[in-house]
Image 1: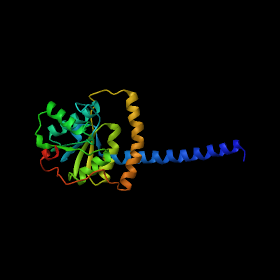
Image 2: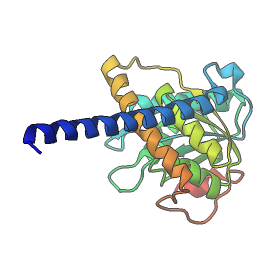
Image 3: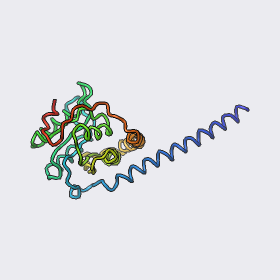
Image 4: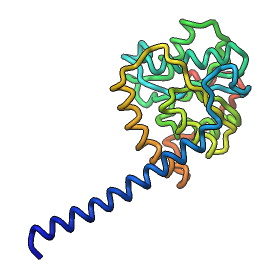
Amino acid sequence: MSAKKFFKKLFKILFILGLIFFLFSLSINLYIIGFSKKYIFTDIKDVPEKYAVIVPGAAVVNNRSVSHVLRDRIEAGMNLLDKGTVIKFMISGDHGKTDYDEVNTARKYILQMHTVEEDKIFMDHAGFSTYETMYRARDVFCVTDCCIVTQKFHIYRAVYIARKLGLDAVGYISPEITTFRKKTILSWNVREYFARIKAFFDVLFHVKPTYLGDQIPITGDGHETWK
């Protein structure tokens, strides 16, 4: 076989494999979005009452300030708490290193900006991913029903994972206090496209989170999680 024919055949094989992957990945994304859509709300007045609100982590700066993404999530969650739609507030995020702490930075922001009963605030220090956040919400914090607050690009995957893990979960799209650049939103959506594929297989194969540990029921005192 000549080199020209070889590369032509190789290109054809790679093209077919690429097309199969594209169609498969697109199907997964459409399935997750379609599955979650009916459980997602944009108007706070429409959000059904749940026991807890879950705020997935996002970037913080030097353990001193929350990013605009995390701030928008926190503010939307606090609005649900103030309105009485939820009873408890759970912050989940990455606190795997001493020099990077999403959950305590978020908690300090809440206490600085809002008047809230401290025992209502729960912290999940090992929410290293959306999947781990929902898994630990169920198995560590004994959450059975919740409202997840996050941005539109992320909400479908979060609700999908939670409901597939057995939580009676809905989603509330956090209103944008900050107007994000189109380039930033595009990059989020591209990343999310592949993150949904991973979430699909995490749920399918019942992947275990990095850490579990003793149960700390959400019905108790949130101070137990502040350590």
